[in-house]
Length: 313
Image (cartoon, rainbow, N blue to C red):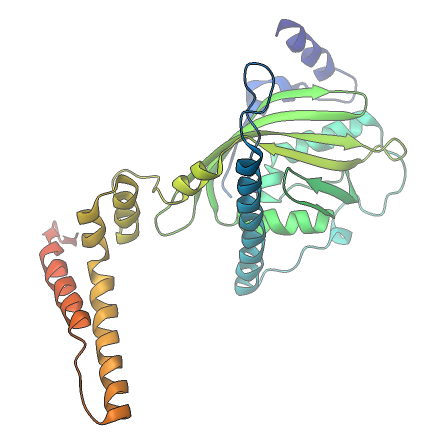
């Protein structure tokens, strides 16, 4: 460990580089603005501690999540009227001259300072426009697509905290280790946290990054659990109360939190079925189950309604 720290300190003070990458100020970045992949855990003998079938199922699940997130981000950007990012508008584009390693390293550090792979706010001038972005289950080319994806989904992230835990420079690449957490701007405000690493591979001719390879040390089951669990232990709205009860397996709490929605949907469905039944046969056959659900929801909602200090709870 001591030799690694000494290596980091020497690299930090190379001419044209910044020592901040090894300082606490640089190691911890807080942004106000992921692909989530599985990294196989190793057993004591260095083998992979998971079956091939489990890995295939996890990869298939996360691949579907990735493409679903990309589609959701595109739809969100369309609704919000965001302009599609064009790398040609970015600073530094159009420069074909080789870039010195120390300059590329500083560009990468500047991008990390802006939480670029979460927010999409970095310049990414150290990257080749056709750079390959890869992880254990998906791969694509192009800085434009990368910035579009992280920028779209980054708008849903709040209180993002990114900490660089390691930085190793080699002859052909740089590897960073990091961990981050954020709160998703959804009605129940779940918190996501993960750790992982990124390997930046350089082109010998241009000096730019031509491969960006990520590993996220997180399990699919934990991703799902975190998405369904509010970050706050004290619910402030129905969505938080519902998902908090769901995560605890509290059936009574789930019913209380969803009573109003059940009441509205049941009454609407009851009236709709009555109308369709009458228009089709000229007779009315009341759907008693929907009526009972609506009444149960109404009773529960009436009992849930309380006023404390002028606020409804």
